[in-house]
Length: 114
Length: 111
Image (tube, rainbow over all chains, first blue to last red; front, top):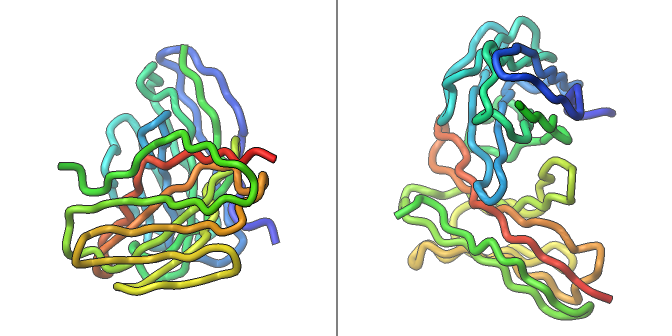
C-alpha cells in the first residue's frame, strides 16, 4: 500500500516557468490537500478538495491552481513561478470525515525557483 | 496573538531522558488535537490524536490536553536517538474547519 505519492521529489525552476506537482493516493480518500512548508513557518494550506470535481482555497492560494478529476489524483499547478514559491510542498489525504481529522502525508516535493 | 504557538527549539537531550513538548492556542473552539512527527526530508506522520480534554498514552508517548489553559503537551519517556525529529502540533474545531499547525519543535536525542 503506497499511501500518498508525490512526484517529482526535487525540482529547480526559473522565474516565470510553469510546472505541475503530482499527487496520487491509493486509499480511496475523499479529502485531499496541498500544503507548503517554509523553514520555521509550519504548514500552510494552499488548496483542498472534498471529492472529485470539488476544490476550494486554503490560507495561501495565490499563484497556484488545482484540479480534481479523479478520486486518486490532485495535481497542483504553478503558472508563473516566483522566488516566493520556493518551498517544500506536501500533499495529504484523509477519509470523508472532515477537514478537521488526521491526515496522511506524502514525502514532499522540494521546489527551488531561481 | 497567533492561533497556535510552538517553541521551535532546538531541544537536545541525552538518551533515556523524559521530553516535554508543548503548544498553546488561543481559539477556544479547538477540540481536536494531534501530534505529528516529521523526520528529515520526509512528510509528517500522525503520532497521537486526542479529542477534547484529557490524557492519551501510547507506549512511550503521552498526549495531554488542558482546554482550560489552552495548552497541549506531548511527553516522550525513555527517549531514543530514533526519536530525533521535528514534532508538529495540529488542532482544529468543528467539522468543516481546517487543521492549524504549529511551527514545529526540533528534537535531538544523543546516545
